[in-house]
Image (cartoon, rainbow, N blue to C red):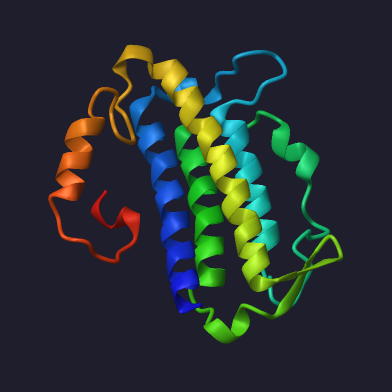
Length: 183
Protein backbone atom coordinates (compact mmCIF):
# COMPACT_ATOMS: atom_id res chain seq x y z
CA UNK A 1 0.00 0.00 0.00
CA UNK A 2 2.96 2.35 0.40
CA UNK A 3 3.38 1.85 -3.35
CA UNK A 4 -0.20 3.12 -3.69
CA UNK A 5 0.59 6.32 -1.82
CA UNK A 6 3.84 6.91 -3.68
CA UNK A 7 2.23 6.15 -7.03
CA UNK A 8 -0.74 8.40 -6.25
CA UNK A 9 1.52 11.33 -5.42
CA UNK A 10 3.48 10.78 -8.63
CA UNK A 11 0.24 10.61 -10.64
CA UNK A 12 -0.99 13.87 -9.13
CA UNK A 13 2.41 15.49 -9.85
CA UNK A 14 2.23 14.26 -13.44
CA UNK A 15 -1.20 15.78 -14.07
CA UNK A 16 -0.14 19.02 -12.38
CA UNK A 17 2.82 19.16 -14.78
CA UNK A 18 0.57 18.61 -17.82
CA UNK A 19 -1.49 21.63 -16.83
CA UNK A 20 1.62 23.73 -16.31
CA UNK A 21 3.12 22.67 -19.64
CA UNK A 22 -0.14 23.72 -21.26
CA UNK A 23 -0.19 27.12 -19.53
CA UNK A 24 3.36 27.70 -20.79
CA UNK A 25 2.38 27.11 -24.42
CA UNK A 26 -0.46 29.57 -24.79
CA UNK A 27 -0.72 33.35 -24.62
CA UNK A 28 -2.11 34.76 -21.37
CA UNK A 29 -5.31 36.06 -22.94
CA UNK A 30 -6.16 32.57 -24.21
CA UNK A 31 -6.37 31.31 -20.61
CA UNK A 32 -9.74 33.12 -20.49
CA UNK A 33 -11.04 32.10 -23.93
CA UNK A 34 -14.26 30.09 -24.19
CA UNK A 35 -15.13 27.97 -27.22
CA UNK A 36 -18.86 28.65 -26.72
CA UNK A 37 -20.98 30.66 -24.32
CA UNK A 38 -21.71 27.52 -22.27
CA UNK A 39 -18.17 26.11 -22.23
CA UNK A 40 -15.52 26.74 -19.61
CA UNK A 41 -12.26 28.58 -20.11
CA UNK A 42 -8.99 27.25 -18.77
CA UNK A 43 -9.20 29.83 -15.98
CA UNK A 44 -12.68 28.63 -14.99
CA UNK A 45 -11.51 25.02 -14.90
CA UNK A 46 -8.56 26.03 -12.72
CA UNK A 47 -10.90 27.93 -10.38
CA UNK A 48 -13.11 24.84 -10.06
CA UNK A 49 -10.16 22.49 -9.44
CA UNK A 50 -8.87 24.94 -6.83
CA UNK A 51 -12.21 25.04 -5.04
CA UNK A 52 -12.50 21.28 -5.08
CA UNK A 53 -8.96 20.75 -3.80
CA UNK A 54 -9.32 23.28 -1.00
CA UNK A 55 -12.59 21.71 0.10
CA UNK A 56 -11.57 18.07 -0.23
CA UNK A 57 -8.08 18.24 1.28
CA UNK A 58 -8.38 20.83 4.06
CA UNK A 59 -8.59 18.82 7.29
CA UNK A 60 -9.72 15.88 5.19
CA UNK A 61 -9.19 13.24 7.86
CA UNK A 62 -11.43 15.06 10.35
CA UNK A 63 -14.02 17.09 8.41
CA UNK A 64 -16.39 16.43 5.52
CA UNK A 65 -14.75 16.98 2.13
CA UNK A 66 -17.56 19.29 1.04
CA UNK A 67 -16.91 22.26 3.29
CA UNK A 68 -19.73 24.61 4.20
CA UNK A 69 -17.56 27.56 3.07
CA UNK A 70 -17.18 26.19 -0.46
CA UNK A 71 -19.21 28.03 -3.09
CA UNK A 72 -19.08 25.50 -5.92
CA UNK A 73 -21.45 27.31 -8.26
CA UNK A 74 -19.28 30.44 -8.07
CA UNK A 75 -16.29 28.39 -9.22
CA UNK A 76 -17.80 28.53 -12.71
CA UNK A 77 -17.87 32.34 -12.84
CA UNK A 78 -15.11 33.36 -15.22
CA UNK A 79 -13.58 36.03 -12.98
CA UNK A 80 -9.87 35.25 -12.82
CA UNK A 81 -8.23 38.16 -14.62
CA UNK A 82 -4.50 37.40 -14.88
CA UNK A 83 -2.17 34.48 -15.42
CA UNK A 84 -0.55 35.32 -12.09
CA UNK A 85 -3.90 34.94 -10.29
CA UNK A 86 -4.60 31.70 -12.17
CA UNK A 87 -1.22 30.24 -11.22
CA UNK A 88 -1.67 31.30 -7.58
CA UNK A 89 -4.99 29.40 -7.38
CA UNK A 90 -3.51 26.43 -9.26
CA UNK A 91 -0.53 26.20 -6.91
CA UNK A 92 -2.55 26.78 -3.74
CA UNK A 93 -4.89 23.92 -4.62
CA UNK A 94 -2.09 21.49 -5.42
CA UNK A 95 -0.17 22.50 -2.29
CA UNK A 96 -3.26 21.76 -0.19
CA UNK A 97 -3.54 18.31 -1.79
CA UNK A 98 0.15 17.42 -1.42
CA UNK A 99 0.26 18.71 2.18
CA UNK A 100 -2.67 16.43 3.00
CA UNK A 101 -1.50 13.22 1.35
CA UNK A 102 2.30 13.38 1.68
CA UNK A 103 2.33 12.58 5.41
CA UNK A 104 -0.09 9.66 5.06
CA UNK A 105 1.02 6.16 5.93
CA UNK A 106 -0.31 2.77 4.96
CA UNK A 107 -2.33 2.65 8.19
CA UNK A 108 -4.26 5.78 7.09
CA UNK A 109 -5.58 4.25 3.88
CA UNK A 110 -8.47 2.38 5.48
CA UNK A 111 -9.58 5.27 7.68
CA UNK A 112 -13.07 6.47 6.86
CA UNK A 113 -13.60 10.03 5.68
CA UNK A 114 -16.73 11.68 4.34
CA UNK A 115 -17.63 13.64 1.23
CA UNK A 116 -21.18 15.01 1.41
CA UNK A 117 -21.86 12.56 4.27
CA UNK A 118 -20.87 9.57 2.11
CA UNK A 119 -18.18 7.41 3.69
CA UNK A 120 -15.00 6.68 1.76
CA UNK A 121 -11.79 5.03 2.80
CA UNK A 122 -8.85 7.39 2.38
CA UNK A 123 -7.71 5.18 -0.54
CA UNK A 124 -11.14 5.55 -2.19
CA UNK A 125 -11.06 9.32 -1.68
CA UNK A 126 -7.62 9.50 -3.32
CA UNK A 127 -8.86 7.38 -6.23
CA UNK A 128 -11.94 9.58 -6.58
CA UNK A 129 -9.75 12.65 -7.01
CA UNK A 130 -7.30 10.77 -9.28
CA UNK A 131 -10.24 10.43 -11.64
CA UNK A 132 -11.61 13.94 -11.15
CA UNK A 133 -8.48 16.08 -11.58
CA UNK A 134 -7.14 14.31 -14.71
CA UNK A 135 -10.61 14.71 -16.26
CA UNK A 136 -10.27 18.47 -15.89
CA UNK A 137 -6.58 18.59 -16.77
CA UNK A 138 -7.53 16.79 -19.99
CA UNK A 139 -9.98 19.60 -20.69
CA UNK A 140 -7.23 22.16 -20.07
CA UNK A 141 -4.87 20.32 -22.43
CA UNK A 142 -7.57 20.01 -25.10
CA UNK A 143 -8.33 23.73 -24.96
CA UNK A 144 -4.59 24.44 -25.04
CA UNK A 145 -4.20 22.32 -28.17
CA UNK A 146 -7.09 24.14 -29.86
CA UNK A 147 -5.63 27.53 -28.97
CA UNK A 148 -2.02 26.72 -29.88
CA UNK A 149 -3.05 24.85 -33.04
CA UNK A 150 0.02 24.12 -35.20
CA UNK A 151 2.34 25.61 -32.54
CA UNK A 152 1.35 22.95 -30.00
CA UNK A 153 4.22 20.90 -28.62
CA UNK A 154 3.06 17.42 -27.67
CA UNK A 155 2.99 16.56 -23.97
CA UNK A 156 3.14 12.87 -24.79
CA UNK A 157 4.42 10.78 -27.66
CA UNK A 158 4.32 13.06 -30.68
CA UNK A 159 2.34 11.94 -33.73
CA UNK A 160 4.48 9.74 -35.93
CA UNK A 161 7.00 9.02 -33.16
CA UNK A 162 5.53 5.88 -31.58
CA UNK A 163 7.96 3.48 -33.24
CA UNK A 164 11.05 5.39 -32.11
CA UNK A 165 9.61 5.92 -28.64
CA UNK A 166 8.90 2.19 -28.19
CA UNK A 167 12.30 1.20 -29.58
CA UNK A 168 13.96 3.40 -26.99
CA UNK A 169 11.81 1.95 -24.18
CA UNK A 170 12.37 -1.66 -25.23
CA UNK A 171 16.13 -1.07 -25.56
CA UNK A 172 16.28 -0.83 -21.75
CA UNK A 173 16.11 -3.86 -19.44
CA UNK A 174 12.86 -4.72 -17.69
CA UNK A 175 12.53 -2.78 -14.47
CA UNK A 176 10.01 -1.57 -11.92
CA UNK A 177 9.58 2.17 -11.76
CA UNK A 178 6.77 4.67 -12.10
CA UNK A 179 6.12 5.63 -15.73
CA UNK A 180 6.66 9.30 -14.90
CA UNK A 181 10.23 8.62 -13.82
CA UNK A 182 11.70 9.27 -17.24
CA UNK A 183 9.40 11.97 -18.56
